[in-house]
Length: 126
Image (tube, rainbow, N blue to C red):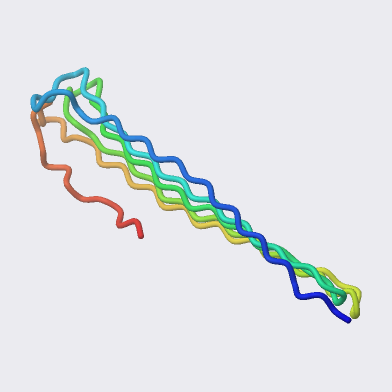
């Protein structure tokens, strides 16, 4: 008699946000956002088994350019996936790895000031 496959799900997430304390942007201004989600699923039966895991992360940060004093913006979105399958009957193991990373940096123009608010574009994160 075969047992039903066991599936385990694990979730872990971290969100951090540091908002500006004033509406004026100065050389001390710093704002950052970070989100991360990790999921893992596994199963096993008499024919084999396997597991899958993936991680999604998103980071965003504003910064003051040291040369111009203007505001800049950095973003990064990353997706990593690993899948492993074991077939005991056929005697093989298959493993797949996928990684996607998107980075965007918006640097201030040489003529911009620390009060510039022109860097509004962002990476969509879903």
